[in-house]
Image (cartoon, rainbow, N blue to C red; front, side, top):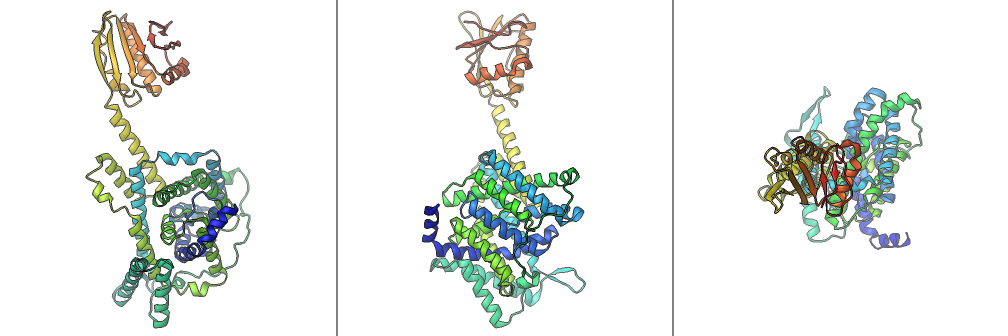
Length: 515
C-alpha cells in the first residue's frame, strides 16, 4: 500500500489536474442524468461523488471514472415514476449487493467471452450516444415551456465556442502536456465569456449545484417481501447494465494503456459504491467511458485521478457552486466532442472489407442496438449473434471419410466437432440400410461436446440396432468418455472404460468393450 501511494506521489500534479478536468465535465452530465431518472440534480451529483470516490479507492481499474450514467437512468425513471425516489435508493442498495456477489463468485472473468467485434460495436455505439447526448444543449426553452433549436447569433456563438474548445484541445498537446488540454480549454472559454459578457448557456442555466455533504439516509420504504418483489427486477437489470458497462469500459482502457484491470475487483468496487450511495441519497452509477477517456487522455492513469475528481466534485457542491455555474455549456460540449472523436474506432470503415462479413455485421448490429436501446441489450444481442454465427459455421464443417477395412468393417472417420448445431448433419452422414454388419465411427479427429451430440449418437445406435447391425465408437477422448458416463440414464446406452475405443451394441450391453 505504501508503494502504491508513493507511485501516485510521483505523478501527483498530472493526476490532480486530470481529476479536476474530469470533475468539471462530470457536473452537467450528472445533472442531466438526474433529470432523465426523474430525481433532483443533487441526487445525481451525490451519486457521481460517492461512486467515483469508492470505486477509485477499491476498484480494479486505475484511471477508470465512475458516476451516474444515462444507461442506468433510463431504467430508473420507470421505478421513480411509479413508486418514488425512496424505492430508487433501496433498489440501488440491492443492486450493489448483487454486484458484490458477482465479484465474489468471480463472474467478472466472463467479460473475456465478449468477442472483439462486439467490443468495436460497443465503443462505436457509445461514441454515437455521447454525441447525441450533447445535441439537446443546442436547444433553448421558449416562453410556453417547449424546446426549440437555437438559431441566428446564439447558435453561431455556441458553435464557435465549441470549435474553439476543440481547437485548444487538439493543438495545445503539440506544444506542452504540462497541463491537461481539456482543463485549459474550459478555463479559457469561461474567461472569454465572463470578461466579454457574451450571452450563452452556462451550467447555472441547467440547475443549481449548491448543496451540503451527502446526508446518511435509510430509505423510507416498508421493509417487507412486497417491497422486495417490486425492486428485485429493477435491481437485477441495473446490476447487469452497470457491470456490463463497467467491465467493457475496463477492457477498452486495458487496450488503450496496455495494462490489465481486475474484473472481479471492479464488480466488488462497483457494488460497494452503490450500497453506500443508496444510503447517502444517490441514484447509483457505474463506469463512464466518456469521462474515463477524458481522464486517460489528460494523464490520469492511476487511482489518484479518480479520487481527486470525486473530491473536486464535492468541493464544487459545498463551496464553489457559483464559480462552476459560470462555465459555458459550449466548453463542456467541446470536451465531449473530442471524447467522441477519440472513442470512435475510425478504422472500422477500413476493416469492413477486410474482416469476415459476419464480424462486420455483429459490429454494426451492436452499435445500432446501443444507440436505440441500451448497452446491456446491445452486448447480449451481439454475444448471442456471434455465438450463433460461430456455431453455424462450425456445424457446416463436420464431415466423414469412409472406407472398408481388411475385416470388411465400414469406417466413418469424423472430422469436426459434434455438438447441437452439427448433430443433424452428423446423422445424415451414415447409410444405415446399406452399411455392413459392423460399422465403426472413429472420433480421433472429433469431439463429442454436449447433450445433443450424445442424443445423436444414441439415436444412430438404435437405428443400426434395428437393422441388426453393430455400431462401434473408437478413439473417444477422455473428456468425451466422461461426458457419456455422466449422462447415465439420459441415453439408452452406457459406456465402459477402454483406453482405445468403445462399442454401441444392444439395449443391454450398450457401448461395450471390443478390440
